[in-house]
Structures are given as structure tokens and as C-alpha cells.
Length: 557
Image (tube, rainbow, N blue to C red; front, side, top):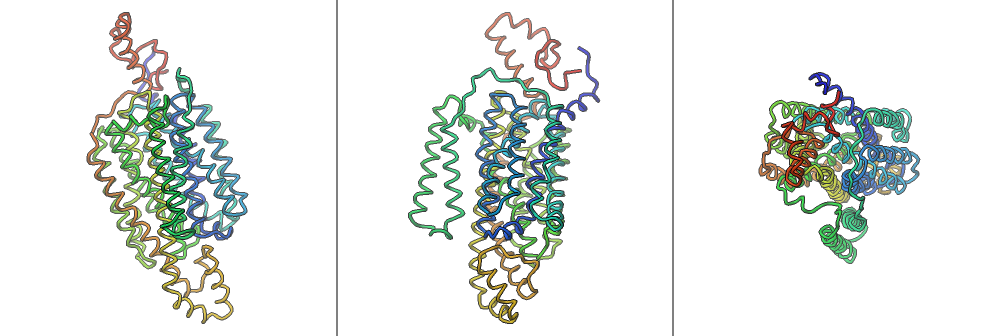
């Protein structure tokens, strides 16, 4: 076999990753392009704060539920085809959402969008593990962090400009040409993965029970206190149903031949602690992306374009931390110190953001956002890296998607709880400020009646268009509501610090998933077939076996 030059291998790896990077960019841009225009969308569709929260949580819910399903399929069928299917589902649902005429339709299409997003999130990690070893993965994870940062910065900016210039519906169509390019790139550059010889078995009962448990919990969180009382028949039915479904799910997973989430994974301390830490990361990441954009528009009177610009400090923190830490992990091989620092920064950012008001110095708000972004950048991808480093090659799909699943689940529940707390707090503050608002409206004459009707309708108001005297009151109310929502993320962030501290620091492997799989097969042949000894001892290293049928990108000419 002709030996590859050191320069050639990275070029081949980058070529194989190009399709994944573009696919990730599509999924990110399609989501973030809507973030700054969401208050305008909900206002135009005559939705309330609950609709605002469900437009976000519907996507997160189906993403969380579908992630372990995609991960399980990744261990059983062709991963490249699965990735392309997920990309098509995601983009078609995104485009369909652009035709929504009411909040319910928008929420439905966003739910379908989440099905594709779950596949993109789970499969990109698994496919990357196929071609890059954990030790080298830090360098390339920095590229994923950079793409994420560019999409997260560019998306809100692009969405704000499109909304102000052409209307918010075009935000859902802008990703179509990029998606077509991503499909072509994936087909041309991504190598085919080895199909498992196992018979494909899908744990359908597990899917139903998991979906029921999570859905009932989220519906209860977002509806209790508004549609029905916190303590009542509805609460007993929903919470009781969620608990029963969760217990049955655990029983089914223990009995299933191909469980959706193998509970044996929790015997591994690295997996269990990474899952706990990922929940806090999900709450911080999704909560910040949803409520910071709302804070800029509802509490500081910014337009969608201005709101996109104002969230740049958080993305800068995420970009610098993700790329910088990824390079340091590849160079020195140590990952735990960065996770500890990242979890501390994440906690500090959440605590500080829970103190913001409508007139807080924007420099301080920028510092708080930067700290939160840096914390997310240091923890998000590296928790997956730690799990992939210790997971069995045959379980790399379910292990990777397991961490992603609980991160998405944490984000889903977190956004739901934060949204419910925000809605309740805002309602209470409007009630407390009724006399003050009434006095201001009375002084406006006929215009005051118009604003009174809008505030009483329950529809999210357009704060930037309000008269100064009324706008200050509404901005103060929403600022207090959003800051109280961030306070909910703090205890989870503290728990993440504890979980990271107890993570065992295992050295990063220099073998890819494919190499580890064939190495384990060689070890099995050595034990079970005496003749296999010759094949193993003659090489000394699986990486340089000349006739190995499954060589990685670094081994091919």
C-alpha cells in the first residue's frame, strides 16, 4: 500500500466532512433565520406567548424523540442514506412552514421539521466518528463549531433583514438552494458506511411510550396555570400518564431485543454523567437562543435586524471557545479541564442573565452573553466526544444520539418551563401595572384605545412601534419576565458542574470507529479461531494492514 502523505490525509478528511458541514449549516440557518422574526410571526398570526413557546418546543420535542431513533438506525442501516433522508425531511418541512396561516399550522410543520433535525444532529456525530479518531476529532469539531457560529450569527441577521425588507415568510424558503447543494455534496464526498449484518428491528412500542411520556409532560408544563389550574384533574391525568408511560418505557427497553435507548449504557459512568451535564447545556443553549432574541425586541425595543446584531457577543463566545478548545484538545489530548471551565462559564452566564433589566448597560449584557456562549462552546461537542471515546464501536450510534437526545430533551423541557414561567410572570406584572398602563393610555386619546385592544387581545405586542410612554412600561415587564426565566436554568447548570467534576478522564483514542471495530473483530478471531493468530501478529497494528477491507480515510491513497 502506498503511504499517504501527512498533508493528503487532512485533505481527504475535509473533503468527506464538507457535505456534513454544509448539511449542518442548512439545519442551523433554517432554524436561526427565524429566531429574530419569531415575535413578528406570532404577532401576524395572532398568537400569544404560549404559541410563541410551542413554535419552538414543537421542533425541540420531535428532535428529542427522533434522535435516539435515528441513532439506533445508524447502527443497523446505511448511515449516508439516512443522513440524506433526514436532510430532505427537514428542508421540505421548513419550506412548508412558510405557507402557514395560523399558529397551529406553523407548529405542526415545525414538529415535522424536528424529525429531520434529529437525524441531522445524531447522524453527523456518528458519521464523523467513522472517519476521524477521538484524538484528532477536536480539530475538526472546531470546524463544526465555526459553522454553527457562522449560521447562528448570520441566521438572525439574515432573518431580520429578510423580515424587514420582504416579509417573514421568505425566511422559510431561503435554505432551499443551500439544501440542494448540501445533498449533492453529501452524495459526492461522503464515503459509504459499512452496513450492519444485523436484522433491522425497530422498537416501535418504545417509540410510542417515549413520545407519550415527553409530550404529556410538555403539554402540562405549557398549559398548566393558563388553560387549567396547576392542581386539578388535568394535572393528575397528564402527570400521572407521563409517569406511567416512562415506567413502561423502561420495562420495554429492558425486554426489547433492539432497545431504542439501551439502558445498559447507563452502567458506563462517562455516559451517565455526560447525559446529566448535557441536560444543562441544552437548557442554556436553546433557552438563550429563544429568549435572548425576545429580550432584545420585547425589552429593548429592537427590530428583528437589530436583535440579530445584538446577540453577536454570545455567538462570538461560542465560536472562540469551540474552535480554540477543539484545537487544544487535539494538540494536548486533555479534554476534562475544558469541560470544567465551560460548565463554570455556563453557570456564570445563566446567573448573570437572570439579573438583566430593560435598562441594563448593554456592555454588561454583552459580557453575560459572551460567558454563556463560551460555556456552551466548551461543553456541547466535547461531552459527545467523551462518550464516543469510551463507547463500544457497535453502540456508537445509540451512545452518541443518547447524549444528543438528553441535550435536546433538556432544552425542550427547559424552554417549556422557561416559557411558562415567562408567561405567568408577564401576566402578573401586567395585572400589577394595570393602573399605570391605564393612565398612560388615557392620555393618548383615540390612539390609546387601539393599544388597549392590542394589549387585551393576548397577542404578542410589537414593542418597537409603541409610543415612548407605553413602551417603557411594557419593556420593563418583559425584561423582568425573561430574567426570571433564565433563573430556572441556574440549578441545572450547577448540577452540570458537579457531573463534569466526577467524569473519569480517559485518554483519547487515536483509532477511528471503523478501526476499533476491526480491531475488536481481530481480537475475537484470535480467541475463537486459532488460525486468526497469524493474521493479527503479522501486522502488529490494524491501522497498517495492507489488505484490510475497511480502511479509513487516513489509510486510503
